[in-house]
Image 1 (cartoon, rainbow, N blue to C red):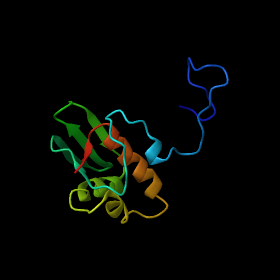
Image 2: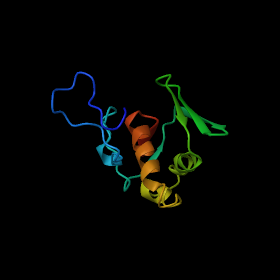
Image 3: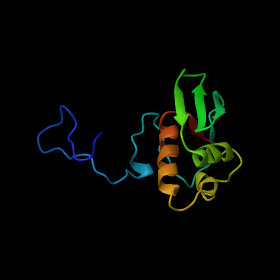
Length: 118
């Protein structure tokens, strides 16, 4: 959505989209799982990652969904999740300036079931 626009069908006076990024913990929880960087996670066992120049393709054999991981740091974090004590530990290798964006992307992968708690 374009910053500053109200979604179609939203009531008059509804909040508009902001240029400020949404914190990872505020991402909608479609999977019923809330992302918490202090907890351990892993790539869902029915998800395959295929390396690409831009990052990776993630395919869920359970849901037949495809997701593009368009950042090499995100791919590195997702691959490290299974061995890291927590998601926060896996995120520690990401440069501080990029960490919020990678954390939001990771929260979205949890929301959509590509990544799950251990």
